[in-house]
Length: 145
Image (cartoon, rainbow, N blue to C red):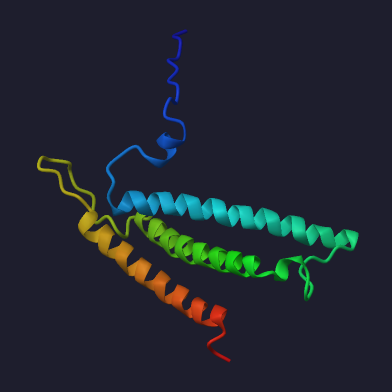
């Protein structure tokens, strides 16, 4: 039986974040991962806080621990992360399903790229995320009744 070669990850976190050219797609990739981790952290904190209710500890009641201004800012950051992560996720789903890559073709030099379709899709999704974020910001600041 042949022995499998083992390749160590010597890059650590940089291998997770970096690893390629630094175009807008790379920044979108990094931000998508970071917002996903942020939303996961919020979700886990939310489970802990709501489970404390079983012990009679209510942290979110009026004047409670979570009504301090720093948590309002955190709430807005979670909303911002959700807006970006959701719309970028829809874009990624469309790409994975083949709607944003065009018809398959034989890879003959000079190679064609699907960036002419994917970048406009990215821009449209980020505009939609910005509109969603602007509406949430107006609501967050209490500018509408």
